[in-house]
Length: 146
Image (cartoon, rainbow, N blue to C red):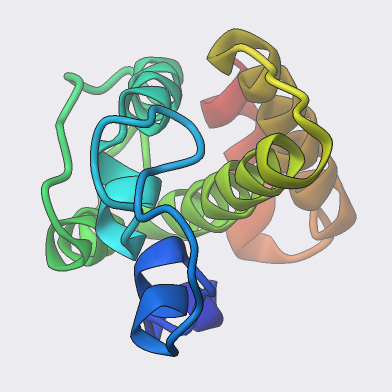
């Protein structure tokens, strides 16, 4: 997540700025230039995943338009989604989107958002289980699963 936060991911727009001859279009939707904000937040593929995540957290779907809006969302804390759960969810989701992008780019393997969400769900459950002995993680599993 820190690499994406620093905007250091080798997206196609960054590769072009380095002088590489690549298409600027997003690997997942092919409709917009592939920047960090587009790839992780506003791409139709990413929006579908974020909607599934927010639905699981029992939140109204919120469309992130830029990285700052995601960071603001992470810092919020509600009874159904405390900030620590939002941090875990965000890290897992960002990584899953990046992996899907690379799978499409390098292996031409397209996986639907619902299937990606299943892997996100499993990773979040595993992350919470691994830290369940810590006080602030004890209630997170019930908040995520219910």
